[in-house]
Image 1 (cartoon, rainbow, N blue to C red):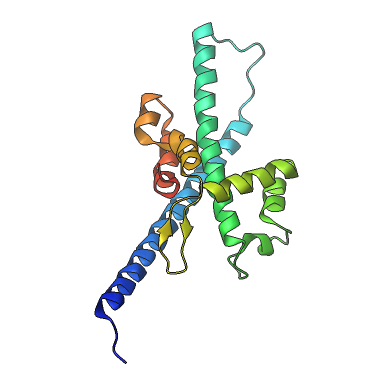
Image 2 (image 1 turned 120 degrees about the vertical axis):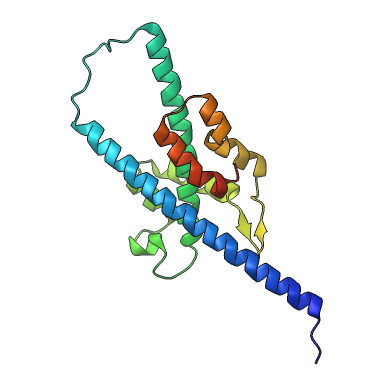
Length: 187
C-alpha cells in the first residue's frame, strides 16, 4: 500500500499547527491565572481600606471619569469572565481530572459558575451559552475553526484590544489582563 506524500505532509502540518495552538492556549491560560491572582490580591487589599464617606468628595468631572473608568473595567472583566467560562465549558466535556465540573462535584458548568461567581443559575447558563458561541472550535483533525458567532466574539473581545484600551487610558492592571486574552479571544 502506497501512501500519498502530500496527504502525509498535510497531516504532519495539521498536527504541528494543533500542537502550537495548544501551547499558545496553555500559555494564555497560565498568564490569565496569574492576572486573576493579582486581581484577587488587589481586591483583598481594597477590602482592608476604609470606605469613603458618603457622598464621595469628587467633583462632577471626577465622578464622570470614575463612572467611565468603572464601565471600561467592567467591560474588560466581562470579556475575561466569558473567556474563563468558555474554558470551563470546554474542559467539562472531557471526563478526566482536568474537568472542573467533576472536580467540584457540580452537575454542569453553569452550576459551578453560579456558585463561584454568585450568579443566578439562569444567568450562569446564559453565560455558558455565550461562551460556547464565541469560543474558537477545533475540528476532529485538530484544525482551529472560527467561533460559531464571530461578530459576537469580536464585540465581546473589543474591550481587550490594546490600542482601544490605551485610548481610553485604562489602568495598568486592565492592560495586563488584556494582553493574554487578546490571543485567546481573537481580538
